[in-house]
Image (cartoon, rainbow, N blue to C red; front, side):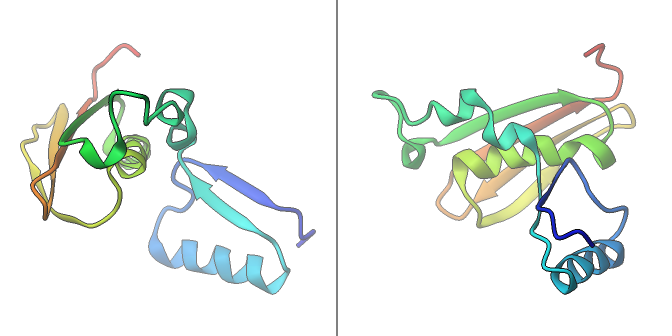
Amino acid sequence: MSGKPIYIDKTFSPDLQSGIRMFELAEKHGTQLFSSSALRFSKELADYPDSRVSRDSIEFMATAGPCYYDNYAVHLFEMIVSMMGVGARRIKSLSSNQGRLLVTEYADGRQASMLQMDHAPF
């Protein structure tokens, strides 16, 4: 209610309805509210494009990380969207109880993978 700008890293809401209420409350009080993965703005991604590779020419990208889908997948997807953009056509899942392998396909044939391992020590 203070109206101070708010940035929330990671998943900011346990469900859609809670998220909607947060944004409605922020709007009511004139509060700027933004949620994203901090990895979307990492130095490694900011360095692209370099002299060899442009974002438009990336045909495949891979991300990997630890932990559980519910609280960490947003970080991996944010990096994919930052580098390859929105507009994915579909996502294929080749997953197990201890990890996920998701392949994102774009209409123009580009692909990105997201590997997540529950038991990773990092």
